[in-house]
Image 1: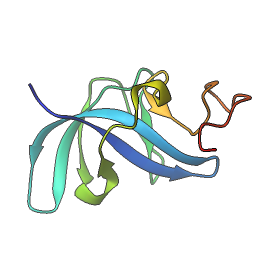
Image 2: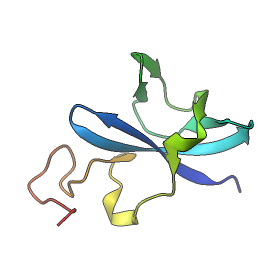
Image 3: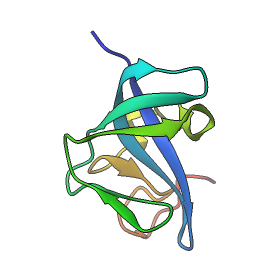
Image 4: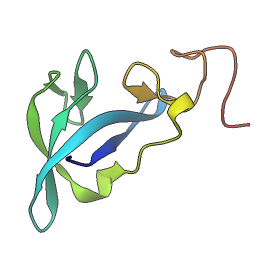
Amino acid sequence: MKPTKCLVLDTWAGRRYHAVEVVGETPKKARVRILTPGGVMLPGRRYVHFNETVLVPKHALSDMPAEHKVEQGYYDGHVGGYGGTIDARR
């Protein structure tokens, strides 16, 4: 089984955690497959679709947060989804 990690991106709306699968590694980068439904907007306005493979820096990957914090493939700090009413960080 290939390891599942999170791609961490800082956006104007806060830090987002997108689910990815690590496919391979180079010395400084990791080749990942995007598992987030709807895809991911990478820095530089590059859009990567679901199930596409892309190289990202290793420092942008982290372990998955707790299961109750991941919703629809990413976690933005709110239990209610897109800026919901309950903040999970408290």
